[in-house]
Amino acid sequence: MRPWRHFAAVMIALFVLGAGLHPGTGQARAVDDPTPRFIVYYNADVTPATHIIDAGYTHVILSFVTLDAESGDPGKLVVPARLDAPLAAVEKLHDAGKRVVISFGGGDMSAEDWRLAVGREAETAAALSRFVTDHGLDGVDIDFEISPALEQGSSAQPFDGVKFLVALTRELRSALPTAATISHAPQPPYLAPDWFGGPYLAILKQAGEAIDWIGVQYYNNPGFQAPTEKMVVGDASDPAPTSVAGLVAGAGGFKWPIEKIVVGKPIYKEDAATGHIPPAEAVSQIVEPLVARYGARFGGLMGWQFSDLTADHRFWNTRIAPVLLKE
Image (cartoon, rainbow, N blue to C red):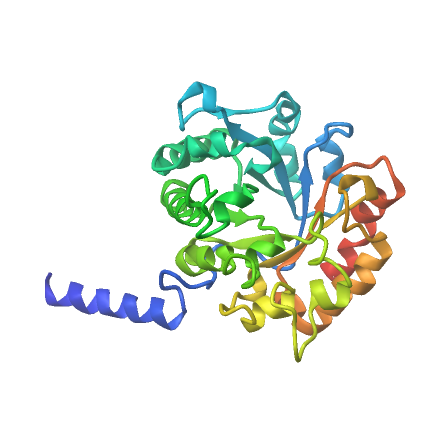
């Protein structure tokens, strides 16, 4: 290496380390993805995706693309017909200032489906990257819900979910366009040190530099979602490890930046089995306290799932953004 190139390399390395962007950390990449985010999943096609144009969301996550174990091909994505219309509307959503992300996995994928990509993560990452490029999308959301695969040390573990998700995330970061985002959607127990050691904390430690945010699913997880003040927001002095304050403080053993924490809640009571709270309480008990504590650095709020059929959905669509985004 020539001396001037060596000097340049050293200066770049010092900048990266000084900015906290070294591998294995939770520091944000230099990507234009301002906070707070106001995110909604689009999964039920009872309402056209074009109705999101006039709603207050900053991000739309289309769900889900999957793999099919019967195909035997880790590079072949299965795209449900319900996503045809929203994928056709991506340009219109972009024109309205929305970022559009595709979610991979979710409840639609079994352990056998996921196993197809184990050890062949680069092929799956390449397929997801092509999908993002072909449809002009802004990123990929990884929604992994195979709990047994994260039960480290269990004899019933179908495969090492931590090792797999670290490899998939790294391969995806390498394959995606530079400006594309990667998010994960862990359930809060996965972040708890007393649940098999908090396997998702290990994922964040090892692949955190490639992850732009985590949307923590504070629903369908009794014991981790209520009371809201304690289990979601978190007490400032003694926070629950899986609460927002607990993750920021590293109460579980690893600190994760507030900019990269998104609180996920069901929008309507029938959108989840448990964890729903009235939308006005989502504002007063989640948005306002977290914005007051962290300001514009707060990573944001995510709702499952988009519709405009109920009063709760319409409240989320129109009345949360002004408070969260300070419009």
